[in-house]
Length: 98
Image 1 (cartoon, rainbow, N blue to C red):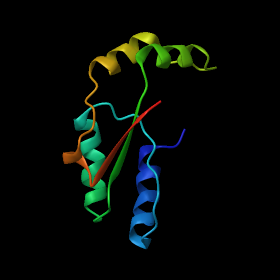
Image 2 (cartoon, rainbow, N blue to C red; image 1 turned 45 degrees about the vertical axis):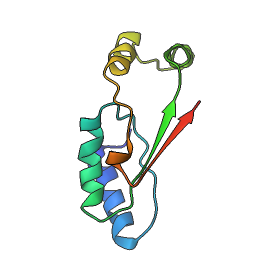
Image 3 (cartoon, rainbow, N blue to C red; image 1 turned 120 degrees about the horizontal axis):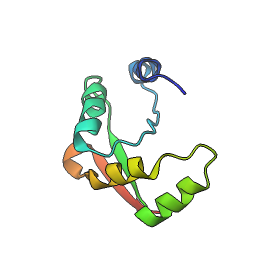
Image 4 (cartoon, helix red, strand yellow; image 1 turned 90 degrees about the vertical axis):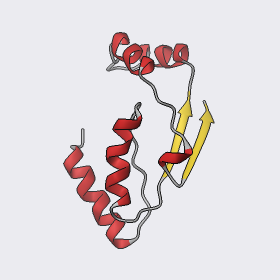
C-alpha cells in the first residue's frame, strides 16, 4: 500500500510538470474530498471527479469475493455517510452507474 505522503509528493511532481494523472480513492464525504481538492487547487489543477454509483448490494457481493474483504460494518458505515459529489466541488463531475 502506497502512503498518502508518497502519493501527494508524486502528484505534486505531476502538477508542477503539467502532466495529467488520476487520484484513485474512496472519498465518501465532501469533507474528505475537500482536503484533496484544496491540495490540487493550490497547484491550479483542473479537477474532475468521477463518481461510480454502484448499488450497496452489489458492493457487498463484490466485497465478499475479495481475498481481503472489508468488514461489512465498515462498508455500511461509509454508505450511511455518503455525500454524492456535486459540481460545486470540481471543474467537472461525472456520475457513472456501475
